[in-house]
Length: 147
Length: 200
Figure 1: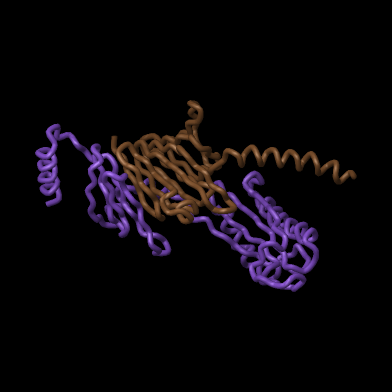
Figure 2: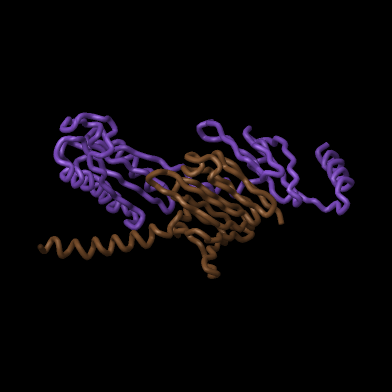
């Protein structure tokens, strides 16, 4: 019983912590150089490796900034200086590997290696810019937007 | 030569559009894959679109949605995207570790793979590790669920001992549900007594 009484609160805490983070988390910042900011709910904070990202987050790099991140479907995104990237929509079912995503590059440079969403349903991953939209069948490409 | 060609194109564009102020806004380049497999990206919508399906093929989209395609060199692509490409995180990598029968001990033959896992985890920034334990079909479902989780937890514990942040380590047990090698129930199969680890 002693074993149970110690384990149960820990298990509940773990379950809560997991459900809170897993509900919103769609990826993670892996590396940053120079100035990189995460804009969430109109609040801007410096981004650092290990930060989790959520749908609707915007990541901004300064004149000497760059960052790399992974999304939970295995997609890898990385951006160079003076970039603004918005994770507009992201839905992924890890069991069926099915989902869809829309990422907007407002300005700057973005390199992408697509993951399971594009692999499972070619075209389900989309990248938008101010003048066009890309449908991703796979897998490595780069986009540049000049204002 | 290039500047002359651009001058001609710009003059042409200016004569085609009264305002003459279309400028390239979006530039897309398809890059070769590590494995060399097929790859493609569509650019544009229903009214005007193109498909990039050759390495280093590019599309320049102007502010009116007009698309111009050409092919550039690897050097030009690398120069244009130097910083973004340098920041690209490494590819996720997976490891399979085998276990002794009815045990949470990694087999001697899997020790080098275990060392390779530790080395890979140590060199990645903000590493995330997903650990999934499995069993063969000997024993009850409930026992195998427990054993598979214990195997995953054993690997997780070794990673925590090596300084990996436990927040980024997930361990689950799948029991005998997902055999690598399908077998009849109650058949011993060393290749199914395993833990699969994805490092991201």
